Every structure is written in C-alpha cells, then in structure tokens.
Length: 166
Image (cartoon, rainbow, N blue to C red; front, side, top):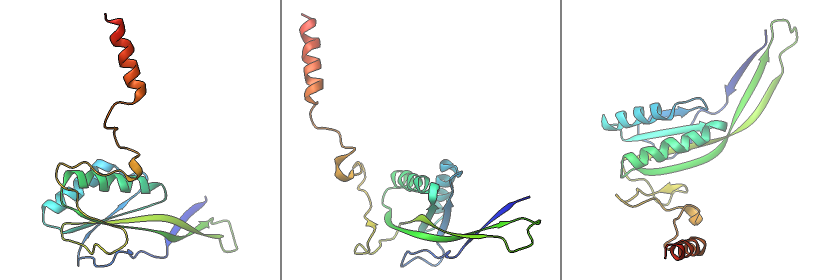
C-alpha cells in the first residue's frame, strides 16, 4: 500500500514578542470553528494573555473566521497577522519499492494571527488595534459597507409602488 508522509521544515511562528506560554491553535481544513473558538475563549477566561491561530492552505479561511468570531465575542483584543510560505516535504512510501521513495517539496501559504489582551507594537506590520465596543468593523475599500441612503433603483421601485396604492 502507498502512504504519504508530510514533514514540515519550519514550525516556528514569525510573530515577534510572544508571551512565554501563549495558546497555539493549529487550524486545519476539517477543524470545527465552534470548537476552536470555544477552546480559545475558555483559555482566555482562565487567564491566558495571548492566542496564536495558524492555518495553512485550505485552512486559511477557517483561521480568519475563528479570529474574527473571537474578536467579536471578546472586545479589546489586539491583533498581529503574518502571512508567509511554509515548506513541506511529501514522501511517498511503498514497501514494494526498492529504491528510495520520491520526495516532493512544496511551499504552502500560511497565516499566523496573534490575538493579545496586552497591547502590541502598533508599528509592527500586520498590527490591528482593538475594535471599539459597539462599533462595527471597518470594511476595507467599502466592499461591505451599507449605503447611507437607498439606491436610486430602490427609490424608483418604492415610488412606483406608492403610485399604485392611490
């Protein structure tokens, strides 16, 4: 039978100024978001000051989702985000092969996000200050912003509907 083994060459985090014992949560494609957020919330409530979420490849989206949910649930968290490539070696093994098994080296996109109760260096690239209580998050480029007044299309539709009521 054919087996795939993965070896990661770099397990260190590219985040400067980590506390001595932060909680490290590795998010994978099959991870359950609610379980990860529940663990992080419980540990912060127990007194841990920093949580590091790391996700690679298809786990990146879940990593960001976990962080955003936690930031919404626990106001006042400082964030530091780093994106990089992690090198992995994939080794295909088959007992029937006499020669050494082929090894494939891959670079996998990875995101590492630190959430901290304590202030972080605001000059560090990737830093985001805590969200003010009750203020919705700013959307970059206004992609998610709600228009202040109804669009002309909706106004025209409403005017037409009002005309039919007479």
